[in-house]
Amino acid sequence: MLTKGTILQFEPERVLQHNLFNPIEGNKIMSVITYRLEDKNQFTILHAHEDLLYSIDDKTYQDAQEGWDIALNFLKQTAEKVEGPA
Image 1 (cartoon, rainbow, N blue to C red):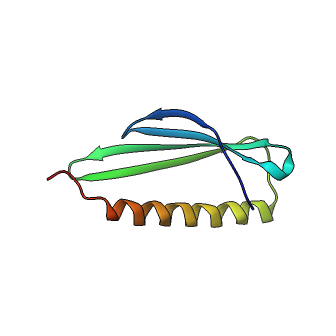
Image 2: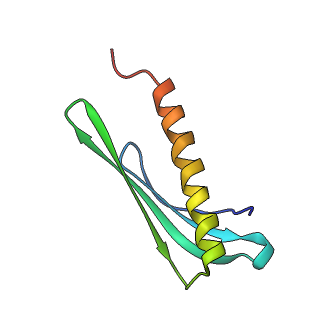
Image 3: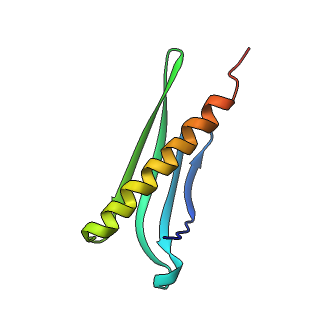
């Protein structure tokens, strides 16, 4: 499923929040997703949370799970390419 979103909150190196909508369904907002980064010594912990704005069926839930897997794997690959401070 193709989805789009609008950034709602952005604090560099701390918070990214956006909504998620399906343009096929008339741009109905499906959820709000918040990513928070927490600095723990030499590590960064990612907290990701999705607030669903309405009930979803099993197929939609499965699609969402697959979307999270893809998104988090992409984020992991991207983060591992970035070099930290010297």
